[in-house]
Image (cartoon, rainbow over all chains, first blue to last red):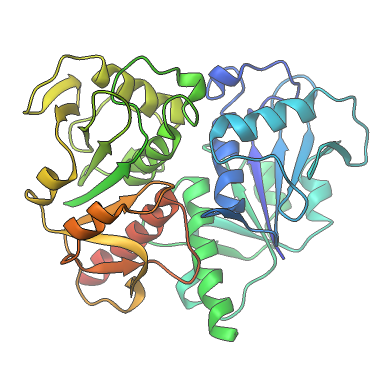
Amino acid sequence: MTIFAIIGHLAATTGGFNLNDMPGGAGRMDVLCRSVNASLFLSHDLRRDVTVYLVLLGGTDAPKTILFSGEKIRSLNPDERSAGALIKKALELPVGEEFRESTRGVYVRRGGLSRLLGEHAFAVLDEGGEDVSSVASFPEAFLLSDHLNFTSEELDLTKNCHKYSVGPKILHADHTITVLLNVLDRRFIGQG
Amino acid sequence: MTIFAIIGHLAATTGGFNLNDMPGGAGRMDVLCRSVNASLFLSHDLRRDVTVYLVLLGGTDAPKTILFSGEKIRSLNPDERSAGALIKKALELPVGEEFRESTRGVYVRRGGLSRLLGEHAFAVLDEGGEDVSSVASFPEAFLLSDHLNFTSEELDLTKNCHKYSVGPKILHADHTITVLLNVLDRRFIGQG
C-alpha cells in the first residue's frame, strides 16, 4: 500500500465549482486532479495498491478531505475533468466527521491535515529533502503541497516527518508522484 | 535540447472540437495535452530546452503536426484545457507544408511521422525497450504513442530506431515523459 496526500490550499470545499474553470474558480483543483491521475493510473490499468487523500482548504466549508481508493474505484478516467467530476460530486454531499462514500471508491469527510497526520506515518515530498535515489527503504505515506508552499502551520505539524526529494529540479506535485512511483516500482521488482 | 513527439492516432486535425470533450470527440486529445504538460512544466517554470511535436492522425484533414517550443511559448498553463485551447487555435488556421505560428511558440503544418523521422534522430519510448536506468548516453529525440499501440506501418518506419523503456510497469505517455526527464535531469547534474 502506498498513500499520497496532497494539500489544496485554495481548493473548493463545496460542489458548486465549474469543471471548465478548475484552475480559477475551483482554486487550482486541476493540480489535485492531475495528482489523482499520477497516483492511480498505469497504462490500461489502475494502481490498486494506492490511496490518495486530497486535503481541501479553500472556501467556506473547509477543511474537507476526499479519499480516492485505487482498490475500490471504478469510474475514473485519466482526463482532469473525470477526477474533477468525482470531486464535485463528493463535495455536493452533506458530510460529517467520518468518511462517506460518494461514488464507488471515492469518500469525503470533514477535517484536514492534523487529523490525517494522526492516522498514517507520513513523509514529506519537498524540494529540500533527501534524494530518493539513495534511500534504502521508504515509508508508506507521502505528503505533498499543491502549487503553493506549505504554510508555517503545516511546517510545524510536519516538523518531525522525514523529507524526501525526487531530483535536482523542482517539479509539480503530480510529476513528483510519477517519479516516486517509478522509484517504488523499481524497488519492488528488485525485491521480487 | 530534448525533443518529444507523441502520435495521436485518433486526434482531431480540425479546430472544431469541444474543449469539454477532449477524450471523446477530439480523439483522446487529453493524452496529448498531458504530454505537453509533462514535457514543458517545472514548478513555477518551463523547460525552455524542450520541444514537443504532436502528430495528429484523426479526422478528415490528417495528418497534421503541431510543435510546442519550450523556448518560445508564453501563454501555456498546466491544465489540460490550456494546451487544448492552443491546439484548437492552431488547427483553426489554414495551413500548408511549412510550420506556421498560431500563437507564440506554437506552430502547425501538414505532414506526419515519416517527415518528422527524416528531421530528427528519434529513439522510441516503448515498453519493450532497453531500461533507461542502465543507458550511458541518450539521443536528443524520443517518440511515443498515445493510448494505442504503434501501427504496423509506424513500427516499420521506426524499425531502426533504438527502443527505451522507463521501468517495470507500463505507463501512460505523459508519465513516461516525466520519468525520462527526471533521468535526464539527474544525468545533466551529474555531468555539471
